[in-house]
Image 1 (cartoon, helix red, strand yellow):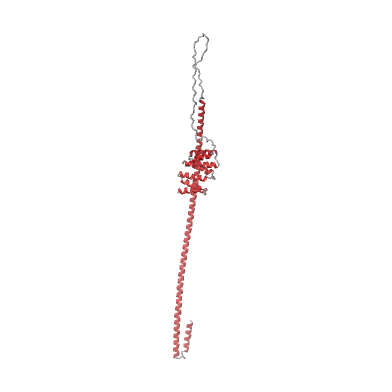
Image 2 (image 1 turned 90 degrees about the vertical axis):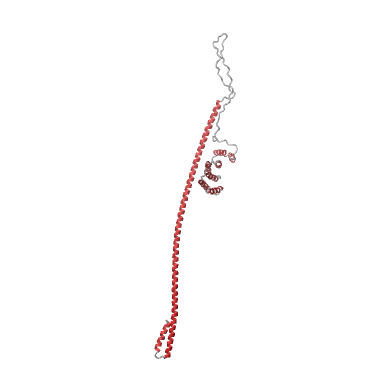
Length: 344
């Protein structure tokens, strides 16, 4: 703008001086005007082109910035959408996990309830079996006592009826002698009685007495330790005799540590004979009545093994797990772990 103003001033000056200027001066002025115009054109071309270029560059840069802004906005929107999707998926996964956990908790509670019911049923069955066994034993004892009493009466009756050694049989004469005076006539003579023969001494009668029943009466305690004698029978694999000996010891002392030991080896004797269902009952007595005894973990282990022998593997697992839960530091718990693994 400053150059344009200068040109205008120069033009006015030229007009004012046209009348008094010479041709040479006019020629110089024209030359100068053309030079000024050329400079104006040069300036206009250079400046305007540069400004247009700068403007074009600025517009292009602005377009690039706008494109970048649009891309950033699109990326932000995409990221926000992904985050929303991730949040929704996380919410759904959390809900699914909670539902699964709740289902597993319900299933575990149901299984636990089922196991508790089975254990309760098992304990009731064991109690019923124990009561039936006790009733059977009492019936056998009463029958044995009756047979023993009957045998005693027969023996006493036979002993009372038999004659003693050297005894004679009394014989009643068939007639009697009559003494008469001389010259008296005897009308009827009484036959003279013959001397009775002396009876041979009769052998004493022996009544046949049936052998006493096994459980009629407990044997009298010997001078030695009864438990040691019973253990000696057990160690010599005379399990039936050992069981009877342990049973007599238990009858004399049904409580205390000796009772727990006796019950345990009663179960061991039955286990060794293959009577696993009866062994379970004696092991259960140790478990129920002597929970703090040292034999109780082993009784649980052998009870589980008895059920395993009877092919009731589920009950065996329950008992093994009970042993592990109640006596985790015992060596029997480690054996129970091995038994559970063998049943898998």
